[in-house]
Image: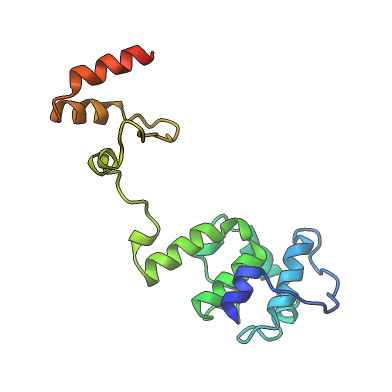
Length: 166
């Protein structure tokens, strides 16, 4: 149930009480807080939120709320409920929080791209299936390509083909 709420944001047809912090809390966030109150582990969440609105404002304004403890009485909730509360209030911080969650509970390899293997990529290519590089700003595979061409005794042919393209 928690995972479903985390992924979908919850769906509810209930009447949403007025947002007590409309000056700083978006309506969508308030709706999510109210809907999260239906989850096991977060009963009366929106009521407690209203009682301690100043503490929640401090949490909301943090530059890295995903690394901070939640205000009482939620400082010891399990990690999934912590992610749900974070997503309700600060959806902009959910990606780094989920990356940390996966790293802690599974392995870093699930959040890091594998290293590029030019030899394996070359093995998958052919004259009819070329290598295509989608580059990030600042990345330059040319040195690796030159070195690989030298190792395979294809440097002269590679440079000739490269110059003919330009």
